[in-house]
Amino acid sequence: MDRSELETMRKSFNTVKRRSDSIKNSPSTLRLKKRVSEIKKESIENNEHYLKQAIESFKRNDIEVRIAETCDDALKFIDELLLECGASAVAKAKSNTLGEIDLKAHLADKNIEVVETDLGDRILQLKKTDNKPVHPTGPASHLNVSSIKDIVNESLDSNVDAVPREIMEEVKADVLNRIKNANVGISGANAIASEEGSCVMVHNEGNISLVSLKDLHIIVAGIDKIVPTLEDAISIVKLETIFATGNFVTSYMNVISGPSKTADIEKKLLKNMYGAERVVVILLDNGRSEATAECMYCIGCGNCIVHCPVYNAVGNEFGFNNYLGGRGVAMSKFIGDDEACYESGLYMCTLCGLCTLNCPVSIPTNEILEKMRQYSAEKGFYPKAHGKIRDNVSKNNSPY
Image (cartoon, rainbow, N blue to C red; front, side, top):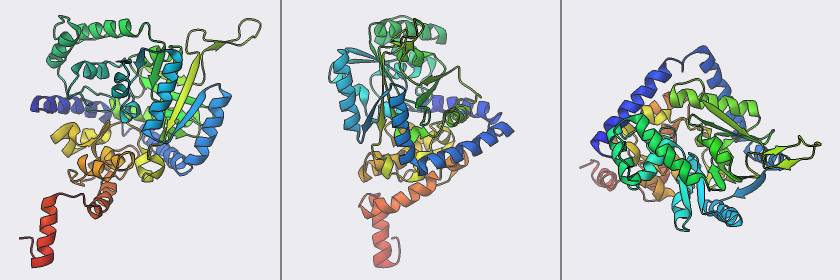
């Protein structure tokens, strides 16, 4: 990231801080934080039970379920589903999990067009290079309106001015045109209610509604997203919204509990009224079952990176894939390996703890990373300058 992008990102983050500061310490939010912490603790400690219950509930709701142990498993399931549909284009909603499995690159190799329907993600997609997101809910927060205008005009052969509404209308028209013949929509999920067999998704743009109306709706979510009940899932997405955007609630909250159906003609069940004829949920492990439990408490709000001094200094080079900042580094050990953890910025972290102080569920990311440094060093992944100091101390009783 260059200096101007970092400056724009910091301005965007300051806007989020101002908005959230007015409500994050309200009595209702404090009660919600306590409730969500309890929900996540219960869910992660008993994940195997709730996973089994979720699978049974999905099947009861006529939702197909696939269990993906690895990233490759998830991609294989998606390939099979797209082949069955004869899909040449896919309408995609924002999802860090789909970024984790690198879906777009995978499908591009198969000549299947993936169209981002979220405005920020679509702008980054049009950027083509150096287009990693900088925030889980505001992926293009580092790009100013002038830069975005240039990206859109160059990619879409348009001539819009540096006016946000003009840019939005141009991108929207292009997206709607590209997905009109797509018969597959694919998204993630913010939370999954195991008792009801429901996937909860939040958005402001209405794009997830478009995605969910395709003939086949594929939902890819980590097993850490599973919670006991729908009430629990709603609590989580409410808290995520407060800390991600500074608002009490988003414009839209979709609850997907099965394919589209009607029984209004002699109570005979008919599928595919307006929405999806098939809903398939792919539950992804990919290292989660082996991860440090506290890593799985994350609700995806991104408030940790908003307050992280390192992230504000260097941007998205601190983190792993779509998982940004210190928590992303911690996750990289489990969904990647020790080398990935080291390369993601394990030794960038100052261990200051501001991430934990500003995390709505108090994930001790700095403590997790401190322990990971010990494991990393034992595997031989550490800054070589540190190794030289260590050797000097051992030989000379001095770092010099």
